[in-house]
Image 1 (cartoon, rainbow, N blue to C red):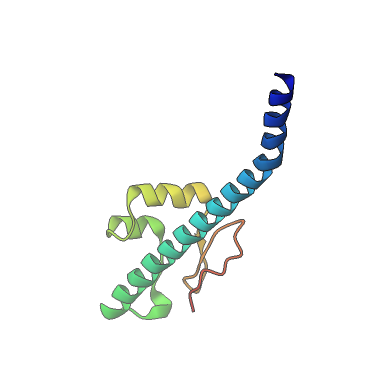
Image 2: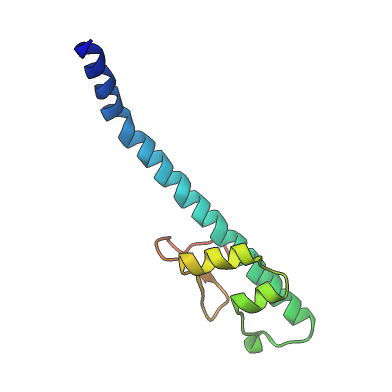
Length: 105
């Protein structure tokens, strides 16, 4: 009986780090995907403002305004605030802890 418990404990010790690593990798990919989604919404927001006649340098991107205009949901805005996601002066979205390469050109 003790041998069975020992073998089970040994298997747990061997596989637990791998499971944790897989979960961390999945969490990072989900965060990167969310940043890419937010970047797409920012791009759409800016494009609509330009199409409406605004000059690119005059457009001030604000997550709250984007939510008001239907580009973000309340749930997305809450996640943006919790993750401390920001927009730089070039309308590029950045999140702490990610490499900030969101694929936007």
